[in-house]
Image 1 (cartoon, rainbow, N blue to C red):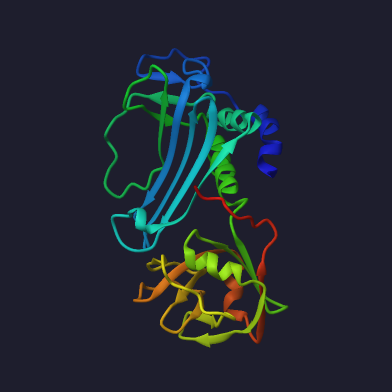
Image 2 (tube, helix red, strand yellow):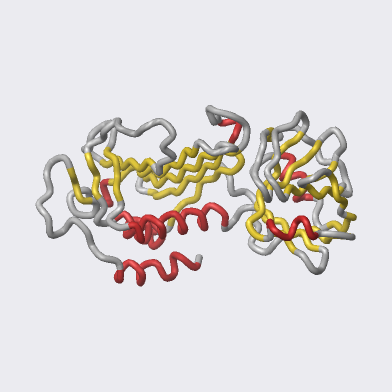
Length: 286
């Protein structure tokens, strides 16, 4: 993974924080007063009141001496976001190098006594750290620098997608790369690949195609979505590629989201070749 290869080198260039100042009991420095071998849980959550709603959680935790990374994305539908809105999730065991690299991004951050001051509409991120012997409710975490926070987000996003199912759609000139969610209909479509099918214009914001076989909608995730979404319209059996925002509709199930090429969707024409993209792997969710 490219970020983790270079991560330790980058950390050497980032400024340390909190080492030269007097620290009160209200604040503990992670990596100094809270040792990483004592950390049991770290949560990073974004819960955005956007349209459509969006929820992202990353979790680092340790069980019986083994380190894990968990990710969960919830999209579409309305508020509140529930487990029925989960579009992607998974758990990954971390090697010592990966754990050390992620801990390096947390090093120097401040663990402050928790305060309930967040206002309505705040999207976060909300970050909390727990450790052996620490307060039961945990402490609120603050990165030592914005650079470390951004890099943490990038590494977690890469880890959450590196083994997920990817699909490439191309007419030979225009190409769209999709990341599929964890739903049974998305898996069903993926298992049909590769295929060559005509693409058609439909409506004001979408292209459609009909798979070689009918996709079973059972277990599908209903909801609205943003530009770049891939969806199944079960009454007709067609797959929809949206290039603008769309509303929820009975029988419309989310399959995935474009990673690249959203602006190419509207230009697709003729026959498209649909195939599993390099880097796809099965069995990422637990």
